[in-house]
Figure 1: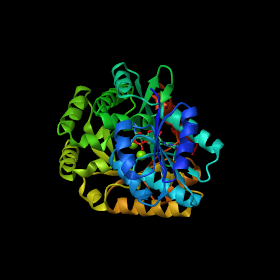
Figure 2: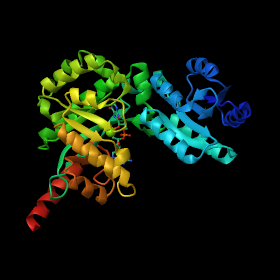
Figure 3: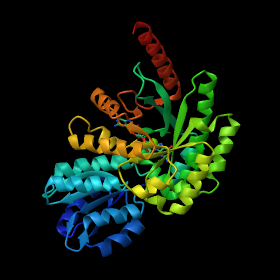
Figure 4: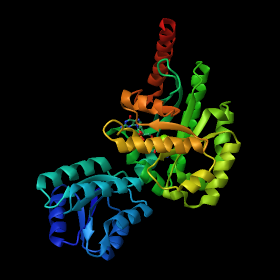
Length: 393
Ligand code: C2E
Ligand code: MG
Ligand code: MG
């Protein structure tokens, strides 16, 4: 399938220049100079890449990003502007906040080398997956789960692994392991997320049963797209799988990303409350990246909040990140929630989180997400390390 690209820039020459380079690289392109031209092209083309000029006379680039997010745009977005890189970077951050796939920024005048590099990256990143390929992958067992440990921060001896997060990957026969950011948006757009989540739930719960049988009583967390919180049968469906594998509901956490899709607050609340009543834990994922209001958070029956890795990974170079994390931890604790920090990559970050009494942590410092067999080994190794550190303490 030919990758498609739309450019919106009021300077037509720039649009044509990008289009020429992109066509050389195998893209099919559409150049638009106004919003009125862009939106019809967007709905008919289903582009895999969008170039967006932030500074146009009749278009507010930031508002444009919000509209793209409302359209559940899965394209890679490249921002272009003549203004300084700080503005471009902050616009890029806003794009991320809206759940968009921001592929980079280009400052005018655009150098051909930079343009080619960014197009190459966007093209590789997108790999233009189609709905039928995704469906086939789910049906033919190409999806696999990796598990990332989550540690309890109050323990002093080694890693006290209390739970893990199940993260889906697509083991593509030709392209190798494809990460979820590349296909979850498409799964959500096409409704395939429901089938994918069924697979993830059953696989993770089955795995949890196997670990319990091996004497590893570990909690497991599964990501649930907010979109699925309009399926009234979801709580019973999950309950039935847990019952089939004789698992206690307390051992399953459902991580829900704050999302624009949580728009129907009444329905979401109904489903979340029934899930909590059944005894499952509910975690608000990626907190701080921003869709749900604090009022909603206060009303919803979550019992955990996960601090987004974009803040946690910046502990060290950035005092602002530390201030934000401190505020989130105290807000969460005041609301009676457990706090989990994701994206812990340094000892310094771990120490800082411990000083705030943050409850648990996840990150590459502890371990990357691992296939099930490697995860079991990791747990066994950390249990023996903990025992020997206690013996010598
Ligand atoms: P998430 O739920 O916030 O998961 C955490 C992501 O952060 C994972 O990325 C994990 O590999 C990554 N991560 C954890 N620690 C570190 C770190 O120290 N450094 C860095 N650079 N990254 C770290 P992954 O596996 O690529 O997943 C991305 C997102 O895809 C997840 O974010 C989640 O929103 C979504 N996702 C993954 N599996 C599923 C699924 O089964 N269903 C749904 N609906 N979404 C899923
Ligand atoms: Mg998660
Ligand atoms: Mg997260």
